[in-house]
Image (cartoon, rainbow, N blue to C red; front, side, top):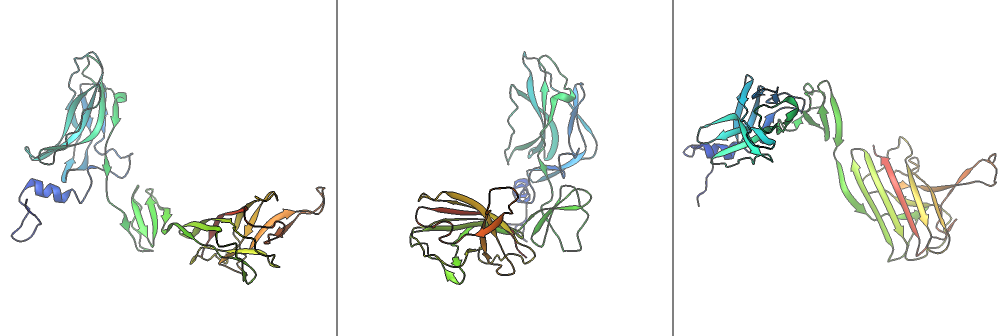
Length: 337
C-alpha cells in the first residue's frame, strides 16, 4: 500500500490513471450542455446503416472530449430473430489513450456499460433499436440517453449579475436563481430546516399553564421570509378562566412583519362532550409581532341571512372549557420582515 499526492515538485502527475483520479473530481461524467434542448453530441438516425453523433464536448472519467463535426457510426447488422437494443457511447480508453464515440451492440436488453478506471470507461449517448434481420436505425428508434453535466452554481454580487445563461444556477445573498436565457428567475431562498419549539400560551400578561404532562408542540420551517407553522396542544390539566383572549407565541427569532396581518386556521375537538369548532387565528402586528394574538370564531345573534355575523375570541373557558382530553391545532403561514 502506498500513498500518493500531487502534483508537487518532485511528485508530479506521471500516469493517465493519476490524472483521471484527480480530474474526475473537477467534473462529473457527461455531455457539456445546459439542458435537454441542447444538441451537443445528440445522436440521430435516419433509416440508413449509420447513426450520426452531433458536434459537442463532454467529460469522460476525467478526460476531456470534443467533437467539432458530425460523426457517422456504422450500425452493426442484427442477424437474429428478435429486435436488438444497442448503445452509442463515449469510451475513454487507457490503452488507446483517447476518448471516442462508439456503436455498442447489445441484445434483448441494452448492453452493460464498461467502467474500468484502469481500462475502458463508457458513458451513454443514445439507445438504438435494430429490428430483426435489419442493419438500419430510424429516427423513431433512437432514444436520447445522454448524461448531462456543466458548471456548478455561480456566485453573484447584487447588481452585477452576468447574462442569464439558460439552465445556469446562480446564488446571490442566500437566494437561488435559474437562468432562462433572458433573465434570472428565483427558485429558492435560504431558511430554517424542519424545527420545533415549545409555544408559550398566555391570556393578557398571564402565562397559561395547561398541566405538566400536556402535549404542547410547535413545528415550523422557514424559506426566505415565509414561515410555515403548525401548533398542537393537548392539555393535561384545566387552567382557570381568564378575562383575556388566548394568545400563543410564534417560533423564536422569527417575528411577523408589521406590514399586514397574517391568518391561520384553528380546529378544536373536545374529548369532554363539548363538540368541536373551527376558526381563524390572527397576528395583530400593532400589538405583537411574536404572537398569534387572537383565535377567532364566527357567530351571529340571529337565524336569518339579514343578521350581520360577528367574530369572537377564544378564551380558556369560553365558549369551551379547554382541558385534559381536548385537542387544539393551529396551522398556517406568515411573513417576516
